[in-house]
Length: 250
Image (cartoon, rainbow, N blue to C red):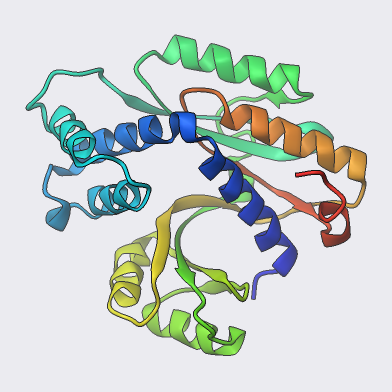
């Protein structure tokens, strides 16, 4: 099973994203528009759109905003032409970084992402410079609801999952991209409540961080990169030791 330290770090990153309320509706609107453009405007027939709409509703995004974003994607309304771009590089201490963006202006986005790499002790690299160290996986986050780690692993395997990142409150089911929809369907029909569901880049090899000053630099880098307007997700291979993580002023 996946390590607890990794999940503790990921939970902070998720909390950080949730704290950026100033951009969260913009992020979700872009995701809905892209999903509708690629797979159509019917959530029942478009798994990516269904998940994007669910996430938007869970975060109290107004219904009119959701419908408008869908219509932009299907072409029923004129709007900005969003595209997805991925950037890679290294943060402090050689931590590998993958940045996912959705933008209507690639030149602006690459400039802002590159500036953020440089300002916070990182280096932006070429395409696939770090992607080799990550697997693209489906991740279904559920409320643990009192289940033990062993019981949850059994549920995950039954659903078609590969691994579990467990915590007593909230756990993540990891699965192959090809099984993502079926694992979602399994847990939607189970007694567990889904909190989030998306595709992620998960590192194969982690960089262990046991120094508080280095950990602070890494966390600052991630925080500032997430604040870039067009950034949707930031993935990394840092594994901050639990004892160090507890000392950070987060």
